[in-house]
Amino acid sequence: MIFKIFSKPATLSDLELIRKYQESGEEKCIGELFDRYIDLVYAVCLKYLKNQEESKDAVMQIFEKLIIQLKNQDIQNFKSWLHVVAKNHCLMQLRAKKSEKSFESIEETQGLVMDSSLALHHDNEDELEKDLVLMEKGITALEENQKVCVELFYLKQKSYKEIAGITGFESKKVKSYIQNGKRKLKIFMEQQRE
Image 1 (tube, one colour):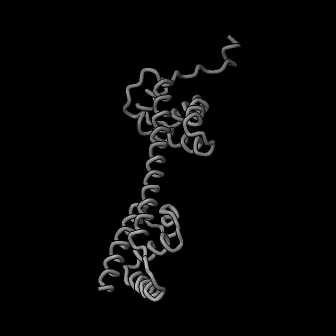
Image 2: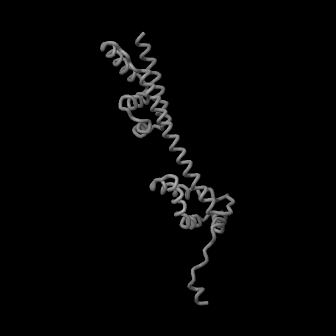
Image 3: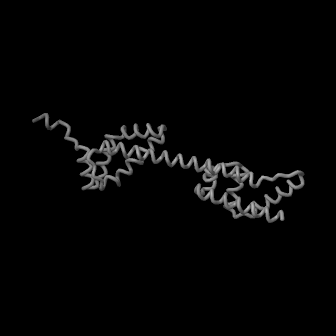
């Protein structure tokens, strides 16, 4: 009898914690699950992301998702389910990274093509000088956002990601400003040469 007083209280199973959370909304139930499985989730994230800091961030994001997902999930084996959730989260991050990188490389390739479409082939320096002056006028005639992005991309050779960081524009906006600016600049130069 005396040993029962000092013994550790029985802990709830994973499924009991989940049901308790679903009924009461007590986030300390999620905290208990977090304590039990943080090492497992971190190991899964590290396996896929191969970066400690990104894996730590992913662990936090996954457990934040649990607060919402566990409210109405019917889970039979929490550990297996959590493993799949962690794996899927990491795969989604890797896909997002991959598409961002391919987006940037496509954009940089288009930038090189654009450079060649605006490339000035001249036999004498006078014509080259005239076209450079025209190009400067054309750039100053662009809308401000286009002007900033075009100058950073072509004159300072910044990547889309760097331009987004400098300007605060979303990557899609940077792409749009550069493409529209390039098109307007090309039209402007063609009209001035006629």
